Each structure stands twice: as structure tokens, then as C-alpha cells.
Length: 273
Image (tube, rainbow, N blue to C red):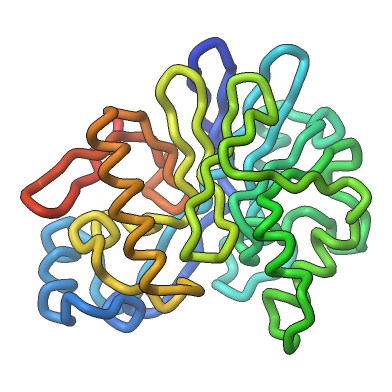
């Protein structure tokens, strides 16, 4: 269980860990640069070549009497190793009662971002929270399509609370100081979120440090539309670098805070501290 407190403008912010995910070798997950280039970038960053270990950094904001959680990890299920599902413990360690959370904001509907919405016994993990996500994302996960694990999980975890869901459009200022930014490709309705004071929660547009930055043109096997994801990633990284926005990276090394800078035709993530 881990938490890290900081500030976003006038908002009190906390990063809460849901624990790491264990994934296969990076060279099997990214297409384009080639295994040699990928391995060289990983070695330079001191990361293993035969597997990937990425964090789940959930953001909690408190402002104006509101308590807002962005994404909620994998919950009780463990498809990516035994170390996930720690958000309830992290909330407890930080002194946060889940019943205080009145807004749950999702970047997208993949399992590691929303399967903590319900507890193992099928009751809401955040009993007083409205749920916000892109309308395009809601449409994607609810259209008639063959079942798969993510779609079935979204139905159980999010659609079970359909009456609480608020669909967002691009640019919506749906909470004070928070603006939705449609960043499709990873999923059709993936949202990043911009905060007053020059901050951005990037979700999974650029999910790996250093590979998503060193090779923004690389195609990830996790992206629904790989070509669109590349276009969106380049656009997002350029804005982060050019506007010098502070970044909150969901899967970045703990606690996921830093900035982006240009390096030739690519980018680099500079972690705070």
C-alpha cells in the first residue's frame, strides 16, 4: 500500500497505488522499432528485457468539498499477476473512506482502469460516486459485439451502475478545474484530463516509460486502433512538451509524476525528483 501527497493548483492531490502489473517481454508488445532498438532503450533505462512491470497510479483530488478518484485499478481480479488490487489498502493508509468519494472518473474501460468499481461480492466499492467517462467510450463498450474478458468485465464493473454514469464529450469542463480531452486510439473513447495549473493525466496514450516516448511511432498490441493511437500519442506528447505541462502517468514508475521534453524527433519523460 502506498500513497503520495502533492498539490495541483489549489487542489489537494494524492497518488494511490493499486500495485504493479506483470506483463510479457516489451519486444513482444511494441511493433515497429525492432527488438534490438527496444532492448537497447530498456537497457539504458536499467529495465529488464524479458518482462515488463508497470505501476497503477490512481489519482485522488479533493477540492471544494468534492473528493474525486481517477481510475481504480483491477479490483479483486488478478489477470496480470498477484500484486495488483491494493487500492483499498492504499486508501485506508491515506485515511480516505471510499464513501467520501463522490466522483469516479475513468480514462477508459480496460480492466486495469475500472475493475475496482465493484467489490468482490458485487457491491459498489464507492457507494456515493457518480461515474464519468467519454460518451464514445461508453458507446464502444456497450455496442453489440462478441463477448471478451474486458467487455464482460466492463458490464459487471461499470454498466451494473448504469444509472450513475455521465457521458462526457471532448472539452467538457465537467468538474471545477478539470477538463476532458478526447485522445482516441488506445480505445475509441479514451480520455486524458487537463487540470487548472498546467497538469495532465495521460491515461494509456503513452503508457510506458521509456518506450512510448523514445518510439512514439511504435504500435502497441494493446491499442484498439493502432494507427490512430500513434497519431494521438504524437499529438499528446508534442503538447505536453511544448506547453510544459506536468504529467501524471498511470503506468509510470511510482508515483508517476514528471514532465516531457523533446529529444530529436522523439521525446523523453523526466520524472520528478
